[in-house]
Amino acid sequence: MLRTLDAAAARRWADLALAALVAERAAIDRINVYPVADGDTGTNLLQTMRAAVAELDATAPDTLGGVLGALAKGALGGACGNSGVLFSQALRGVAEQLRDVTAADGRDLRAALARADELAREALADPVEGTVLSVLRAAARGAAGADRLDAVVHGATRAAVDALAATPAQLAALSDAGVVDAGGRGFVVVLDALHAVVRDGERLAPEVPLPGDSGALEHESQYEYEVMYLLGDTDQERAAALRAALCGLGDCVSVVGDGAGAWAVHVHCDDIGAAIESGIDSGRVRNIKVTRFADQRAAFARDAAVLACVPSAELGELFAAEGADVLVVGPEQVAERFAEAVGATGAAHVVVLPNDPETAALVERAAAEVIDGGPDVVVVPTASPVQGLAALAVHDATRRRADDQVAMAEAAAATRRGELRIADAEALTWVGRCRPGDVLGLIDGEVVLIGDDVPTAAQDLAARMLSTGGELVTALIHAEAPAGLAEGLADHLRRSHPEVEFAEYPAGELGALLLLGVE
Image (cartoon, rainbow, N blue to C red):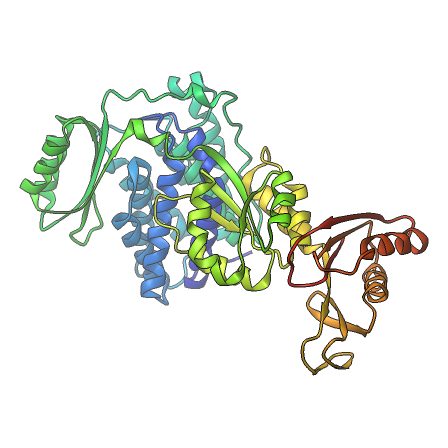
């Protein structure tokens, strides 16, 4: 348990909150009913949090106030949607209250949550209960009555979870759809990340039921567009006048500042020009963003996909038969083709199986460059196609996104990978010197045997891999492997390990004569 929240802990909170929003984005989008059922609240919160963390990365402050201030500044500058604006104000409240605190204790955090509640409510021209505002107020009140940091965080998070569950009783739109408030769910996810940091990984946020019929959440706004921009060179009086003008044009109006002269403006309206001109009359307008609500749901054809990177068409067919989208490419082309392949899935959330150590490093870098507004990309570390197949075997699209990714990663990590290669040069290995033409057996990337006969080496390699246990052996066979290799290995396993299940597949052009996986 943490007794105080310092700069390092706040940084961990930011990273964990971002990861949690990545995992929850699609689910939050699906329950987005109020104020407009446009399916983007999870996306907006994620993009806002990404902007906050990007500012933190760019400035790298080393104090608690600096970390929180950077997060608040980045969130305001990158706020997306009504939910993003409210989130930026909550962060601003926390940052303002803890600006001069070196390490926050329970009393400090209590005051910070109260200030976050205050600023979030001030952000909206017409606050509505049953939304994130109710959840945030409950968190601030739930923090009362305790002094220790862990108790304050636990009380706040528990109260927020309970308040979220109560939102359908406060808003008819939520009750009719059978969902909780999407913005409130996003705030609970972020607060639960803080709970995990302070209380040694403990989580409180439950899985939220999704609507059975996603088509039931239709666009119902009386306005056609969402208009957002940043405003500078203005003051409190002109900001108040701008808010009044925008209230005459539409709804969901917010004009909020960072306390240092920058303002974020948000409105749902039909007259885009009038909304922007009102800002120009009040100060310097920049970063204009206009979204047509009717276009939002057409952004992605499906919720999620698994993309497998493989070196051959034969392996591609094998992964495709198991339900994955496939990118047939070697490491040398993966960077240039990755973004196109992710987009071609048509999914809002893409889990990538790189299936090769070199490809994994390239994919991680390419995933970080996916443009804003694009799909979320999560890379499950698979160093071989046999690990990728193991991960794909446990994939369950109906499971909570974060839980599914953990299950896939655990299945890959639990699969030992072996391979047979032909040495092309003389070298010194862990088991002696090899010469060109020798058969090399590797387990998890390390040479464990040197032989002169491929079938014998294959059997020896399988025996070594099974020495620590295993129930299933998967063999991927190179197109130019010696005839009868798979049959000989199967016969050997039937005699030496009759309890083991054996599966073999032709794999086309591989980087090895044989790939083995043991689960």
